[in-house]
Length: 96
Image (cartoon, rainbow, N blue to C red):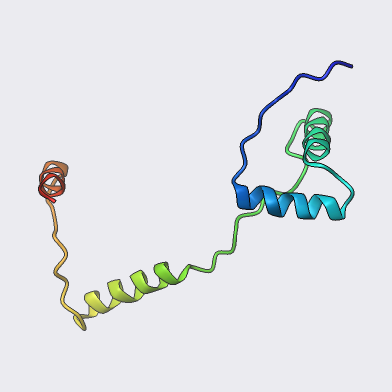
């Protein structure tokens, strides 16, 4: 069987974490991707459950939610610009 080189780009942190986990299982990145690819071909589907990261909002998102609620309740002034159409928004953004 002839192997054709393939390049896969991974975020440095993801690659580091992936290597750590795979090493503990006795696998290399190449071995893992070959395993996953073979199983996809055999099963005709992604061979593992695809999970989203936690639904827990980040600190930035939590702050944005609290700020939006405070503005809605009138606790802090809502000095955000509003626009009636996309052109007004574009004009505003072009001025910034």
